[in-house]
Amino acid sequence: MAELTLADAERMIQAAKAKAVAIGVKLSISVVDERGDLKCMVRMDGAPWRTPYISRGKARAAACFGVPSDDLTDRAMIPVMRAVMEVERGEFVPGIGALPIMKDGELVGAIGGSGGTGQEDEDASRAGLEAL
Image: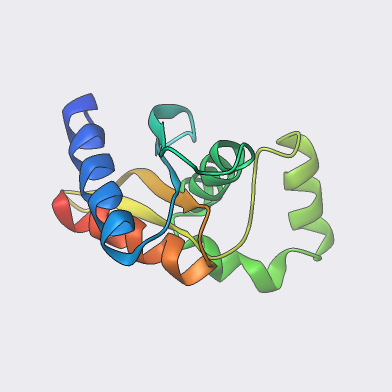
């Protein structure tokens, strides 16, 4: 059984943070396990106060469905998706910025960013994913 370790999460956070610095954005970046539980998170200096919650929510969405969080955007108003968001108490954010983490062909978690444009959030997340 594949596992997402803390060392994996920290390496991904560092790479995503480096990408954010390179593109000039201040992000919060969250890594969650396959259940959506927080493994590791960072809020860069100057990132808005709300970004930790959003980055984690995007990552939870990607982990829950095993797809990029952007793939869930069009489904956000469907009753079943609204119910999932309600059950998750607002801790589930469909929207561009998070990607699922696969290891040995298994879903082990997700990484998500918040603080830039959606595309900047996803670009930083992708850089983190590529570090794995």
